[in-house]
Image (cartoon, rainbow, N blue to C red; front, side, top):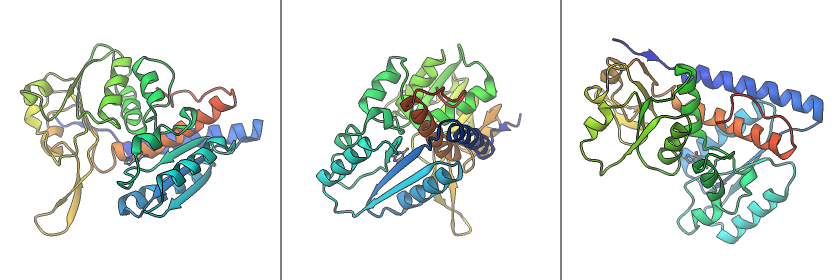
Length: 297
Ligand code: GUN
C-alpha cells in the first residue's frame, strides 16, 4: 500500500481563500476590517521568520496586521502594558505573543493577561477550560489545522481510535480534546508510556507531536491508519547540508498508512491559515456577526 499524501499546502491555500472571501464580505457589509496584533520579544531567528510570514499572510487575506517588535531586555511590566493597550484597542481582534519569551518574563502571566476573546492562539486558561468542557472557545491553531485535515479526509471521526504522541499544552493536550470532541477514543502517549509501539499500533489515527526526528517507524503503524506529523526537525544529510523531517519516518510509514501528511508541506502551512481563521472568528464574535462555517472546531 502507498499512502495518500494529505497536501497541507493546498489545504491551507483553500482555508486562506475562504478567510479572504469572508473578510471581503464583512468589510463590504459592515465596514469592519479584522486586525491581528503580533508581539515579538527579542531576536530569535525562527520566531522572526514565523512573525514575518504571519504578517504577510494576514495582509494577503485583507486583514490589518500590527507588528510589535520589542527588545530582548523589555521588562515584563512593559510587555503587560502593551497587551493591556491591545486588549482595549477595538481595531485589534486578535493578539498573538510569539513564544518562547525571554527567561526573565513569566510566560503564563503574559498569556493569561490577553483578553480571552482576542486570544487567537487559544492558550489562555479560560480557552483551555472552555475547550476541555466542550464549550465555544478559541482553539490552538496547530491542532485545529490537524482536525480540519482529518475531518476533510475521513468525514466523521466518530468511534475511531486516536493516539496522540506528545503532551504539550500547545499541541498534544488540545489535539486530544478536539479528537475527543469528535467522538474518537483517545490515548495520549508520551516519553514515559510503556510499550509505545503497541499503543501506536492500535490507532486508526496517529498524531505525532514530540519534536524528535523520525522517531515513529512504519513498523508501529496499523495498516490503513492515517498519520498526521506535527514535527519539524532539521537533520544533517549524509551528502552534506540539512533537510527538514517530521516526527515519523516518512518512507516506512507511508508504505503502511492509508494517508499521511508530509514534512514540509503538511501540518506546517495549516497553522498560520488557522491563525487567520481564528482572527476572523474572533472578529465575528466581537461584532455579533455569523461565524465562518468549517473554520472553527
Ligand atoms: N511558537 C511556536 N509555535 C507557536 C504558536 O503556535 N504560537 C505562539 N504564540 N508562539 C509559538
